[in-house]
Length: 124
Image 1 (cartoon, rainbow, N blue to C red):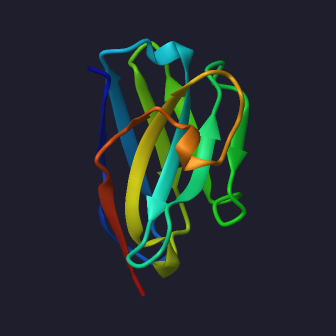
Image 2 (cartoon, one colour):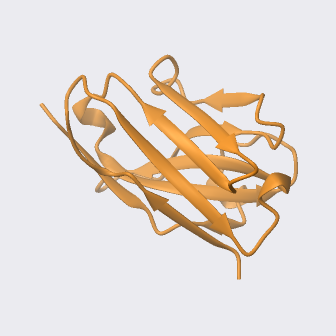
């Protein structure tokens, strides 16, 4: 019943920007810890960024820190990932995920709900 739908992926040039959106329905968005993950071909899914339900506390992977910004709008049931200074190594399928609870975690297994992903391709 809980559904997450990502959008905003596509092609970008190295150094460019892109904003991903994740709309959540069927659940209480404001109670979820939200996260963004990515998975490149042949690689494991990795944590990119997370945000607590208060929309203040954020966590970033080292590769994302300083370039990416996670945010949320609880009134619109939407989480965002603003990506700046994109690099070819950012190319991956990006997934939005939600978990019930307040603890910050980078482990994919801890998340309860997942979107189907949106492709982000960064050319060199």
